Length: 112
Image (tube, rainbow, N blue to C red):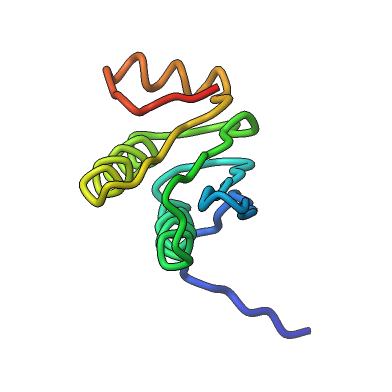
């Protein structure tokens, strides 16, 4: 039996991207948004921006865990998108996401 061990951290985040006709993208996050998975978030948001979306809605209802790295990544991308005349909104955040944002005093545009 051959086993291969990867030194990269295991991530428990699934992402799905859909594009609407009005230059809006929806990014659905499922699982854990933490230090091990923020790279996946960065890649997804970069791909959405490169595709020409002017607005991204991040559906966070199925986030089961988020840490400070996840919050910082969301805030950083929101600032970057805003500085480029684009919009990033967190929609339907799970209770865990809302709680950590509240505890940290973090701000992010939250949509419906």
